[in-house]
Amino acid sequence: MIPVCRLEDLPEGESVRVGTTPPIAVFHAGGELYAIDDTCSHQDASLSEGWVEDCLVECPLHGASFDLRTGQPTCLPARRPVRTHQVVVTDGVIHVRPAAHEDTAA
Image 1 (cartoon, rainbow, N blue to C red):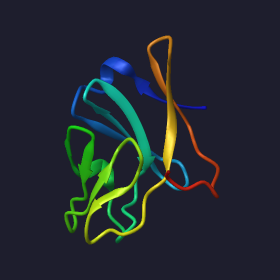
Image 2: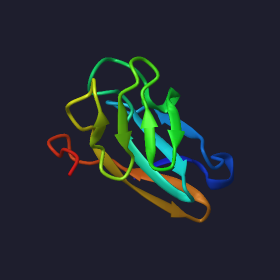
Image 3: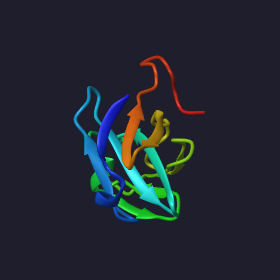
Image 4: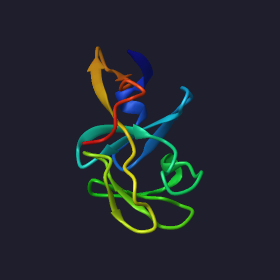
């Protein structure tokens, strides 16, 4: 498990980039916490810098959108999903359990 930040340091509608390899983005959206690979599957752009609405994040580069729950793209130009990761809050600290490198989003 990788510690990310305190829960109160990630306000609703915001995200944080975790400097793992590959990087992971953690989002606080709709009262829930989600973690996906930070790099858009269409082109090298940081999804943590994208726009969050409901359970979707829009890539800041070309507007591809991904479902934070599944990692699936919801519109073009992205065609491939990004991996999702487990998020756990322990004693007020957000932690991410990275998916195995071979795992892909459902």
